[in-house]
Amino acid sequence: MGASMGPMDLNSVDGLSSTTESDNYSHTLDVLGKIKDTVDASTGTELDLPMLCVVGDQTSGKSSLLEALTGVKFPVKSGTCTRMPIRVRCRNADEKGVWLISSDGTQRKLNDETMDDQIGEAQQSMIEGDGFSTDRSLHLEARGPDQMELILVDLPGLINHGEQVEAVYAMIEGYVEKAQTLVLLVNEAKQDPELVGALALAEKHDPKSKRTLRVLSKFDNFDSKESREAACKTVAEQHTQLLGAHAVICRFEGGAKYESAVEQETLEKFFSNTPTNSIHGRLGIAALKSRLPIVFEQLIRTNLPALKVKATDKLTAAQKELASLGYQPLESHKMVEEAQKAILAVKPTLGKSLTPAIETFKEGVFVTLSSDSITEERVREDYQHDAFESPFFAGETTFAAVMHDVIANVHGFYDAMAEELRVQLFHFFERPKYPASVSPRLQGAIKRRWEAVVAEMLNKLRGKALDLINEAAEHGTMDKALHDNFVSFEWNGNEQGSLAERGARRVHRAVQAHCECERKNLIDAVLKAVKHIVLKRHVAFVHTDLMIAPIINEACEEEHTAKHRHALLNEISTLRSCLDEINKLDA
Image (cartoon, rainbow, N blue to C red; front, side):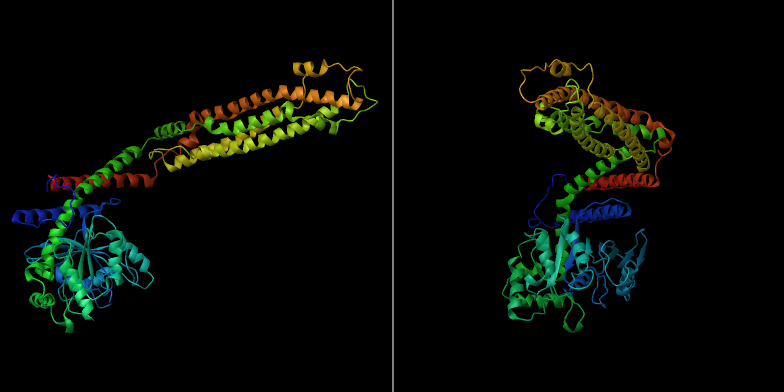
């Protein structure tokens, strides 16, 4: 298959017109099977490979169809034949028979007489209880000189009752929804299409039937003339389409043995009014065997480019992850250095992360200590004239009371800031994007150490900040603003108002002057405290604390990391092998 073959509509493909093309197709299936086996043997590698999935409701005749197609006798005694996905590789070969392929590649030929029981036992050994397995599959290989070359997956029939209805539906849908899946949809010919659950599921994910081929089973069993005519019309109208409906009779009434000639003769009677040469290719098991390889080959052609891209992308991702993890375990100091780089690379920086809390505090202090926020009425609430107190010292108690209230508000702003700082500081060490080479164990040790340092920093900062805030309530003798606005204010007989009013006015001006002076000093002092106690400590933490013995001792690779590295190496090897095989097909 050349690289020039891009995606095509499955309804517009030519058949395998030569022996050479047939041989190439056989080789393609071998390669596809090899890729599948390689992926299955790998842990963690997933590729959506082209596949032909057989889907149908329970009792749709699905297992009988598969037996007629492949020669595999599926268990039918319990009413539920397939209890897990069963992958069947049909191979044209001299030796005839069916082999059970184990997960380790070993093969066991099944006895023709007891094949159904052996398959049932193999399923049971992989399933707990009487339910279904949605995460495991059985692998069979059917060989013989009359076998078609094909790989198909038989899925459990859709069920309508029981504990696993949803699980089985979800499992089947997981196959049907993939663009790489060709759906061989089996339903009884007499059924109303609107009542076929499998058809509704297929139409949900393939509404234009670009990758769904309907097989109308039990074509000799109708319960009305109308249902027979509807089924015949469906087959006849779609006979020119590659994926047009197909009619089959896999079991005859009364349990008569299947014979291809009898099936063909019976089917052609239903289409007596249709030219035999135009409808013949859509009737019977033999014709279906001829059709399926053609359709499946085109499915492979269509999906080969996307499969190559997907495998390449997965390989690139695995290689990138391995590079991050490291091809070998890091030494302790090297691992700590990688952690330091990750911490220093955090954006935004710690300073920027703390800035919103600082700005809110600054705004609150600036407004609280502004002259407009302190009214004369507020001062009068505390001011009382004392006839026995010198007017030159009157108001000191009121000044202290008013400043106490002002500073109480500042304490509230600091508490809010401190809480936000705490949140940001603890959150900061959840943000480093450590490379995979830095073990979770080391990451945990770093975080625990940081949490202890944060508690220490916040306690130290609180003590310093509270001292600064409380000191702001006290006026200084060298305060020029106080001198200009209060001490130099001359109290003379021309001033209006009572002694109490004039005294309150003087205290008000003193408080205003003091607050105007202290608000900038306080903000700057708290800002410097945060810088020295928090930001510089953070730098010391990264460069010094991380190099202490308790941290270094935790810098060692964990067992699951070594296992993950091994899995990545295995995945990379698997994907490279798959790409080599894909490139062979695309050459």
